[in-house]
Length: 216
Ligand code: AP5
Ligand code: MG
Image 1 (cartoon, rainbow, N blue to C red):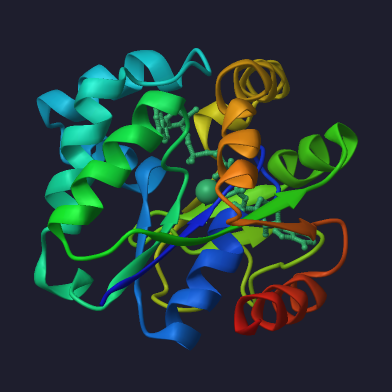
Image 2 (spheres, protein in one colour; image 1 turned 180 degrees about the vertical axis):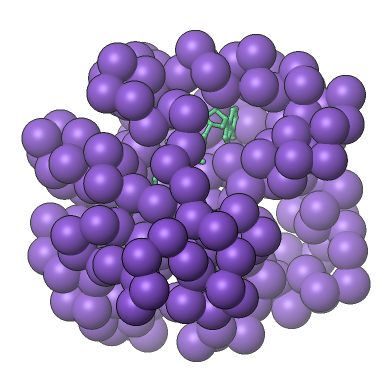
């Protein structure tokens, strides 16, 4: 049976950072809906252009196209053992659709680590974030700086600041998160799958708590 872990939490809390570490440690594919949209945008696909019109405003991309994109991604061979889902689902309709599609892939959501931090921390983390152009590796100018300014440690590509990391857009994304994604906290708590994780500590401490909680 495949293993599926959903990382839930507000913008900038550290989902992508932890998902990359978990994916290596658990040997599961890392699926980030935001990274998939950004990849489409880089390749100038129709989906990328559509997604950009929502992402720039800090709004969610419509459920139907998002669900179709994730379904396609989950059907690829590297997801056979399962996946770490980062940024999906983000609405109750997406969560329902996920349950249906995972049945098809012989699994279900096993655990939902819910990472939290206060809004001031989210603004500070997104404000200082730099992202690698080639593969989306994540840095922070203060908390996780690259060894060489402006370049990714892993693949040497340029690092850039996301358009949606401007403080106004981050504030909007947090509001959208509270309105549209927060209901999933109750959804997964009722299902007995939610694991609350304090996201205010260092990357290493959060990873330690996360790995410990997932063992139980
Ligand atoms: P997406 O890319 O998913 O953005 P998000 O959920 O807003 O989350 P972020 O990627 O901003 O933050 P993160 O939690 O991954 O934090 P990170 O690890 O980078 O989505 C972007 C847009 O795409 C959405 O607004 C929407 O338009 C669209 N979209 C995506 N999914 C969708 C869906 N399912 N449905 C509809 N639309 C969708 O860390 C942040 C920073 O903090 C980094 O600089 C990092 O180095 C630093 N950091 C991380 N952890 C720590 C720590 N413990 N201590 C100190 N610094 C830390
Ligand atoms: Mg992310």
